[in-house]
Length: 135
Image (cartoon, rainbow, N blue to C red; front, side):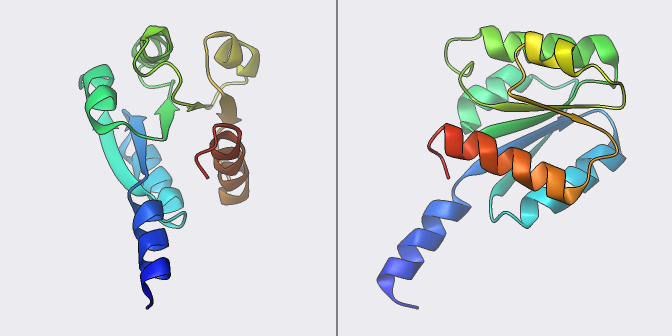
């Protein structure tokens, strides 16, 4: 591998995507999806200090399960988007409920309704990263 390929590979793999969920099945599926995008994974449970971790790890995107438990998920979205240090990080909000209007109003950059197909996730991730100049 020549040095230009090596640098490009390091640049891609150093990008982190934070997965925030309360359900192990959701987290597992999102981790599998993210692995195919050559990004590093930061997996976080909803009970953890998501804001502090986002500030410290500086992910290029956050995938957030807003359903489990509902109030914590939605509050996490509002807290992230209200913070001046991490508020610009794009968030993909995921839910079993058809609440895309609420998700977008609360600050999500993309709202995906579960069950999520890989093609939908990949398109959403590509869109937000390209919009933010991170791709």
